[in-house]
Image (tube, rainbow, N blue to C red):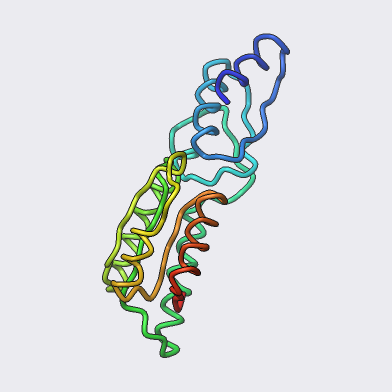
Length: 171
């Protein structure tokens, strides 16, 4: 991302950069955009740090996760008020900047709602090939809500492993 952004600016002479999908890649591109004073239009990346880093040439057209998570907390309150027993939370996430930040938000929401964090597991999406130890923790810790921050491949691995271990959750 960063190398390509610099190439586009210096070799191709672009006057605007738009993208990227990943928050980590977007943050790296924002540094290049800022250095060359070329506007960066953030289309998909959702980490709050993108717009909280003080960049002068970075503009976002989507909402950051801080906005989304406040609604999720309200939804959980609604579910509890409707009689759903939601006490134990499992937090499982890969190690990108976005999901590390999301996990911190989830911990705060859990504290605000008086939920017990019974699992808090980070893994490396680039190297994970087996989710059985995480799924066993989910299964053995009476998790009511699972918050997972992942990419498609590792999310599929987690879901398939949960299915093979006959693990289902309320949320």
